[in-house]
Amino acid sequence: MKDTLREKLEVLSKRHETLNEQLSDPEIVQRPDRLRELSIEQSEISEVVESYGKFRALEMELEEVESLLNDPDPQIQTVAAEEVVEIQEQLEATLNKIQSLLLPRDPNDKRNLFLEIRAGTGGDEAAIFAGDLFRMYQIYVKNQGWTSETVTQHEGEHGGFKVVIMRVVGKGAYSKLKFESGTHRVQRVPKTEAKGRIHTSACTVAVLPEADKIDDIAIDPQDLRVDTYRASGAGGQHVNRTDSAVRITHMPTGVVVECQDERSQHQNRARAMAMLRARLLQAEIQKQQEQESEERRRLVGSGDRSERIRTYNFPENRVTDHRIKLTINRLDGLMAGDIQPIIDQLTTEYQASLMADVNAFQ
Image 1 (spheres, rainbow, N blue to C red):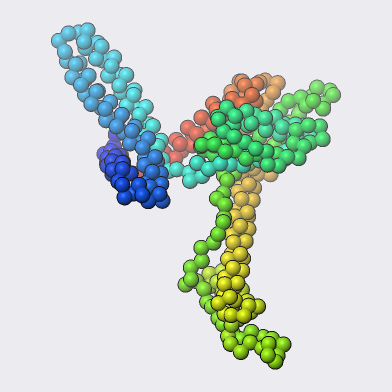
Image 2: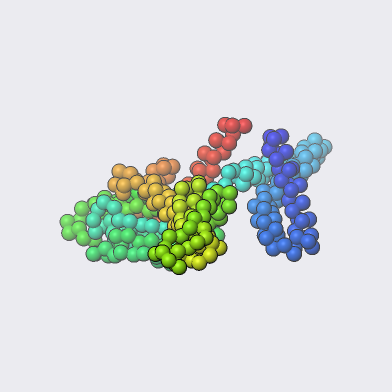
């Protein structure tokens, strides 16, 4: 283990000890927000600290066993040599786990998700295949102990779906399914094919992390310019003789609201602030929706057969993930929801690329 990595792990271990002490502090226990904040931090580093503790214990065990390699008894030497190999393998596996846990985290990994399947090129067969994919994911979600609900569905004329969207709720759901986004291509004889010819069709899958609900907008008073003026009226006794009307400008966005309907400046200001908050909230929601739409377009491409990430070949009972050049000759099991082998391999490849990037800058 590199000295820089060991130093980092020592710092995390000390921080973990400090967090344990703070979480048992009566004063912090009385502060729910602070208690939650510290608990989250502790949970985020607990696994890597535990793995480092195991690594150090294995190092000590290895040192003891290596001392037996020079024992006068040949049998003890033989047993010790076998144990050294076993402990070294455990050390390597533990180190790999530690390095994996220290990789940059995707902030969306813990979120729930929306899984969207759309029929692409291929007509009725594409819609039927969309239905097959939907069932595959439904079974996988159920086997993971997660829950799902169908949000939107538009059925195809001969079965399946033109589009179907489900919401998935579960621990680590997005971290496992995020690599499913893209064009999925199928090769098989469609049920609607009378001459038995193999057709190629495609569906697009988009896996989107569920965004936080925007309930309110924080407004910094320093970002506001408030102007007061005399409200206009029809004349006579109804003309406002004081500067009760209020105009508020939100300088970062340029949004301007004004109110002169109420009798007092205080009331007009409160109404104008409510209007400003509503407009900024709507703008933020629209921005979020546009970002989600752009992310969906980026994930799925055009839905053309050539833009495939995975091919499902039914005649040969074979599935190929083109991104990592992985082929599994067990398509029937995959369609029955057993997609974990592919997910594991995709995750491993992704972590390896991250590790390579990290090492390049060390």
